[in-house]
Length: 261
Length: 258
Ligand SMILES: Nc1ncnc2c1ncn2[C@@H]1O[C@H](COP(=O)(O)OP(=O)(O)O)[C@@H](O)[C@H]1O
Ligand SMILES: [Mg+2]
Image (cartoon, rainbow over all chains, first blue to last red; front, side, top):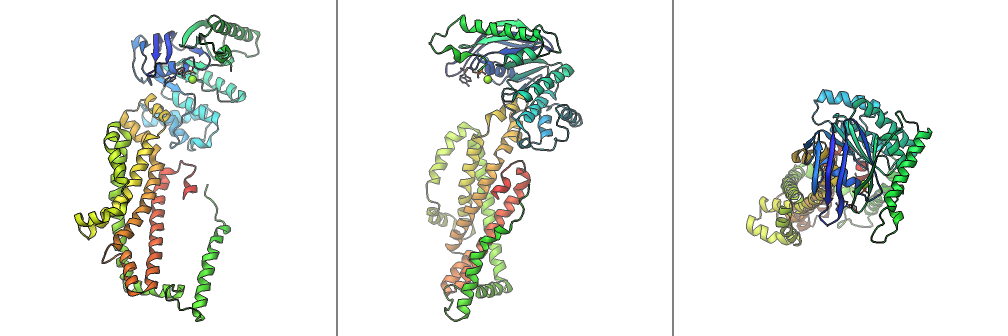
C-alpha cells in the first residue's frame, strides 16, 4: 500500500505551528525513516497519518485515496508500549486484530508470540514483562491484522543498545514476511540507516522536510561494513546542513536541535 | 503471588486477648461488678440468649436488608451519575455543581426532612443509607473516568474500536479499580448511616438493639450489638472484595489493598 503525505500542515489549537508543507511518500513495502530532533513534529506527523489528529491542511492518501480519521489498514506502535494492563499478553496482541475471526486471531497470536520470542507468555500480564518485551508485544499487536501501513514512533528509543539491536532484527524479519509499508520516526542515525530504504530529514519550528536521501547499502546490512559507516556520515552531514543553513531566529542555542541528543 | 500466612500477624491479637482475659479475671474475682463493661463470658451468654430466642437473627436480617437495598440504590445511582458526568462535559457542567452543593450538607442534617417526606419507617432509612453510599461512589466514578489514560483510548481508536467499543473495552476496565474502591468506601459509609437511621427509631435491627440496651441499662446487649455490627461490616466488605477479585486480577496491588 502506497502512502502519500501531500503538503500537510498542522497548527495546534494553541497556535503552535508544528508542521508546514510536509511532502513525503512511501511506496508499497518501503521503509521510510523520518529523522529529526525533539520538537520537529515527528510525533505530530505520525498522529496525523494514524488519524488521531486532523491535519490543518494538505492530504494524506492511501493508494491515492484521501483518508481522514483512523483507517483499518493503518496500524501503529507508539513511543511507549501502551499495552492494556487488564488484558493478558496474548489478548493484547489479539487486540490489534479486531476484524479477524476468533480462531484466526488465536492462531496468529500463537504464531506471533513465537516470533517475538515470547512463546508461553500468552497468559501472563503485561506487567510481568520487561520494557523491551512489552515493546515487542506492541509490535506484534500492530502487525497481527496485516496492516498495509505500519507507523513506528521511536519505539526503540527507551531501550538499551543490546535490546535495540535485537528489536531492529525482529522488525526487519517481520517486515520481510508481511511487507507492510513502514513510516518510522527516529532521532537515531544508526537506526535509520540500518532499517530504512529512504531517510527524510526534518527541521523544526515549524517542522519541515529539509532533505531526503536514499539509503544505498544493500540488505541485509552490516553495521560494521565501511559502506554503512559512509552512509551514516552522509546522513550526519545532511543533518549538519539542516542545522546551519538556517539559524533559529529567536537566538536560542542551536545545539538544542541536535538530532542525536 | 499469595502472601503466606505469617505468625507475626497474630501479634495484633495479644493486646485485646490479654485485656479480655484480664477483665474477665478482675470481674470473676469480685474486684469489679462489670455492670458498665460486661466481661467476655457475660457477653457470650447474652449473645447466646439472643440467638436462641431468634431475636438476633431477626435483627441481623432487618439490618442487612436495609443496608443492602440502600447500598444497591446508592451505588447504582452514584455509578450512573458518575458515568454521565465523567463521560459528558455537558452533563458535568449541568449536574456536578448541584451534586457537589448537596454534598456540602452534612448528611445527617437530612434526617428530619427525610422523616418529614418519607415517614419514620423503612423508606426514610433506606433513603438515608442510599445517600451515604451515593457520594463516594459518584465522586469515585467521576474522577476515575476523567483520569483514564488518553493514550490507552488512542490505542482503541487506532485499532478500530467504535466509541461504544472504547467505553466497554477501555474506559470500563480502566475505571474498575477506582470504582470498586469507591464501592468499598460507600459500603462503609452505608453502615454508618444505617446506624444513624436505626437510632432514629426502629422496631427491629441491630440499631434497635443498641437503643433497647441503653434504655434497659443492659451494657451487654449494647456491646454485643456493636460487635455484630463490626462483624457484618467486615463480612460485607470482604464479600465485595471477593466478588471484585476476578475483575482486578491484573492489578499488582489488589492483595495489598485487601
Ligand atoms: N497537543 C499539542 N498542542 C500544542 N502543541 C503541541 C501539541 N503536541 C505537540 N505540540 C508541539 O508541536 C511541536 C512538535 O511536537 P512533536 O510532534 O511531539 O515533536 P517530536 O515528536 O518530533 O519530538 C512541539 O513544539 C510541541 O510542543
Ligand atoms: Mg515524538
